[in-house]
Image (cartoon, rainbow, N blue to C red; front, side, top):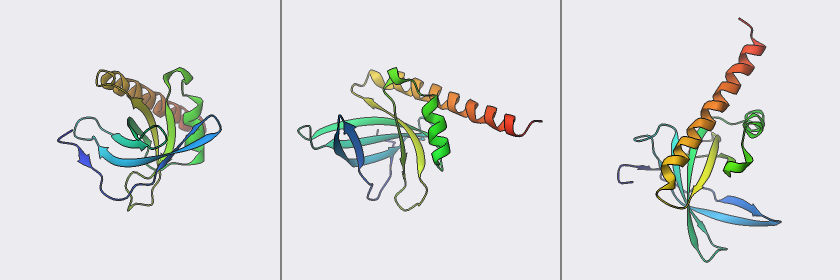
Length: 140
């Protein structure tokens, strides 16, 4: 973590829906992990509804500029068993771009390596879907 690039600025909170209740997760810190893993971010969130519990989420960038079409395409390829969250979030506060990110909560240090592998596999699958779609639209 010492070499991680902390993204400065005020970050908007995330909202997690549990049952019918909406919980606000304050973003304490956001790190760009490009020095280790390309297109990865680490979110440090504070869940005030659960006794001020700190949560850690690893995220991979699926698209640098998101759209409803891309988010629907990504949703279709997600596995429900892996407990991923798909969000549209502006990672750099001064930029108006909204990125499409795939998140997974990490509860232990041992879990990080497998989470990174799962996120990379899902990103590869998503990219292949986009390429296949483009090839259908523009036959060579």
